[in-house]
Amino acid sequence: MKLKTYKDFIVWQKAMDLTVEVYRLVKFLPREETYALSDQMRRASVSIPSNIAEGQGRGSTKDFINFLFIARGSQTELETQLQICIRLNYLSETQAETALNLCQEISKMLSTLILKLKS
Image (cartoon, rainbow, N blue to C red):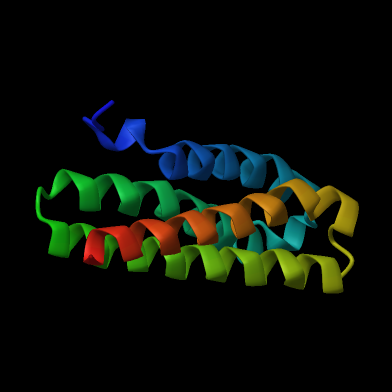
């Protein structure tokens, strides 16, 4: 099957799942983090599938690769923010487990896709 749109990419689908999970998790953060950490986490999570979609929509392999690198940067940013939440005891490791596992999976998928597109 040939991929037709960004929606066909499993990595985009997983990134959408991660975004939903992050929106669920930030509800557990303290109220004082509403416009700080939780806002940053929501923006980073939204950036991942958005950059995959925008890059694929540009129609150029070079642009797509560039946007995949940006998505990977947002993924590592989000992973760091989740670790901060754990260290600050805003989230338990158990609460963050699904999101962290998705981060790792997405990271590997983005790296693989970048390598395939480069070759």
